[in-house]
Image (cartoon, rainbow, N blue to C red; front, side, top):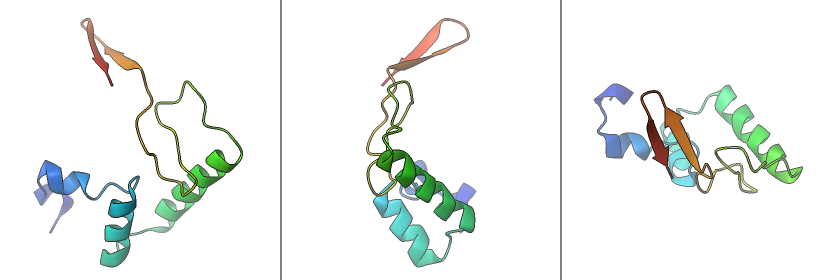
Length: 83
């Protein structure tokens, strides 16, 4: 099944930023070298205390992001999105 054939719920379940999405990708053999390097970089950011207040996400010790941390995002036309 191609990624563009997935429903939004199924696509969300494949999020590599979540432990369940990572495990699914690993089980399906979809992990690539860049995925592993990105997760290792996130683990290093956590370990060395680089979770900055102005970043939109924070990472846990396993390199996953537990939640969005952004206050909001403004768009053209006066629209803003707040988390």
